[in-house]
Amino acid sequence: MKKIKGFTLIETIVVIAVIGLTLPVIFSIFFVLLQQQTKIYRLNTVKKEGDYVISLIGNTIRNEAVTIHSASPSDDTNKECTGDGSLYNSTSSLYFLNKTGLWFGYISDGITIASSSASLASIDLTSSKTKISSFSISCSRRYLYSQPSVSLSFDIKYCNDVACSQTRPEELASLHYQTKIKLRNQ
Image (tube, rainbow, N blue to C red; front, top):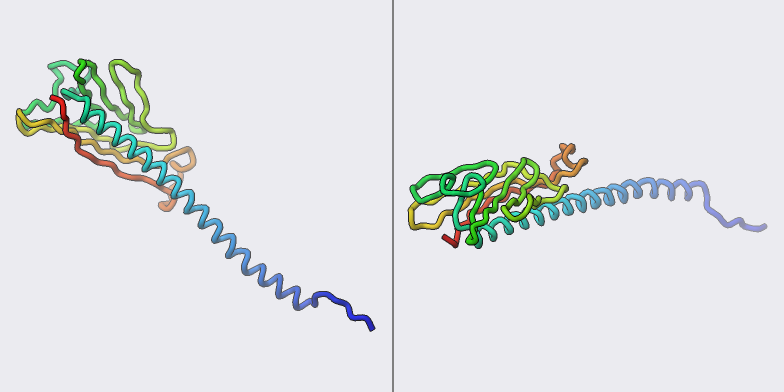
């Protein structure tokens, strides 16, 4: 008599059961890794843009600004932080005069931070992937002979069309930036 080689019904059922138990585990691990990779990408984007903005604004104000003004065009009537112990608070913008007499400033519309100047049109410093909120810029100067300092703070979060509407905390990526910048030139 000839023996038929093959799988019995019980062996086939055991293999299907093992595959049925391991396949969902493998898919869940894959989707968790995919979600973590998305969160890392979003945090990386937020950090990169936030670092760029804070570094650019800080270096430009520190190295170029001579006087601080509350409006443009900058003149003696809107000069701020003159050394009388006053504090100027602004939630939207401050303007600065450089050594050559040209003004520049930073403004926020609640979504982006833009650089504006006398010689160039307004330029957005952030991309469409991020949203700026709680932008605040102010200056203070304690004494007449001390250098004024500019306080800058803002929140930046990842926000494209899909990410802004998501409310799950694990899918949000946001950071808070805050710094003080002391003027060198005066």
